[in-house]
Length: 499
Ligand code: NAD
Image (cartoon, rainbow, N blue to C red; front, side, top):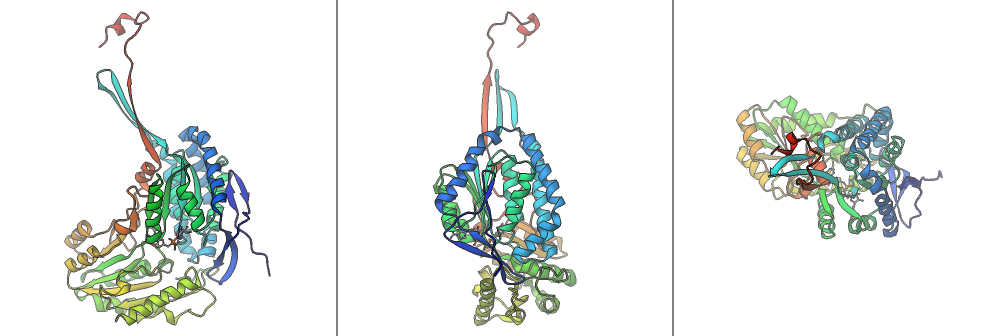
């Protein structure tokens, strides 16, 4: 048996193999084999990493922001240089196709590019003579040690939503990646060190609940960024804020895709499939409930079934022709299969049953599914499946489609497919979600705009990305200054008499 490598931790600039009491296996979902093991840090081991980040804080926060940004320029160049290798690593530990992995890494690079511009974005405000002889200025300071706790579905991009902005704003950072996909985070840490980031500014600790709880309660942690499922997001928000941290916690989703009868069928069905089956449905912005308005339903379902059945499903590691790869774990495949069985029991129709493909393979495969005639009381209408499953509900008009959105607990993304500007405008204004697409299947905002989940898709007020990210990772200081005249003997009479 080959030895299974323990994923290294990174603390104070030193890589080490943590001596843990428990480990989580990392799989290649395309082969079903174990490729590494993640050590689960104890509370004490976690606290040591926070201390390392705290020690690096005074030096890094005093480093001019222009120099901090230069590290990001070098880091960006290294990411470009190693682009294919990073994408291949994402595919290997996650299972998404190489095309999807490249798209993910691109989104991550964009976050680094955004961070390179922080010297311009962090400039403060100043108003001279706000009162007689008094000047006012408002500047942004770093908040301190920041923590990122990330999910398995974007091993590269989601950490990059957080630490480039936090670090360039002058904070130090502790990343706790998903224990299922820790290898991409390690590679990012290596490249940051190569880019010249000083020791202790960026650190990685691996772990589960004990490690997370230690981060949420440590007195030297100032801010916590979380992305993951809704129950954990809510827990992180409540626990972190109860311990005096500022917290942004993004959760799960149930994204509605509204199809109006006038939508271009061919284009719409391609986008529906890309939205629901991309990354095997494991995206927080994946379309999961198609809401067909009026006569749109039958032709749409027929075309979707044809398209889904023709998709090449298979191991993604090493085969670029595969359209949809595996899901993250064998247990997750079973969870998706159970959701399909429950939908059938609840009275829905499995127009395309993904369980007919891949369920017994070594790779954690399950084919795309179309679940038709879904009604609001069925579990699949409101539960996040997080697999390649598109449910279809039928409604009479746009008002009914908006009402389904109002009843939804989540509020990440929603999309309308139509050629009618009025319907698009009504939908954009009134749908109960924070990220809206008009004829765009996955309306995930890019680095320059905030990732604005609503309702139980987000806990907190400042989101990741865009200038909201900068606001989250900084606190403002307002200074009022008065310099009264004192000894004026050295001044030229012209200045002495000035008002
Ligand atoms: P998850 O909630 O299981 O895990 C996320 C992180 O929380 C991991 O680092 C994990 O180690 C940690 N964690 C898990 N259980 C914990 C516990 N009991 N106490 C403390 N920490 C715990 O999520 P996941 O399965 O890795 O990711 C999928 C979920 O993430 C989906 O619900 C998806 O919608 C969501 N997601 C949301 C967004 C967004 O922007 N809203 C983006 C990506 C993923």
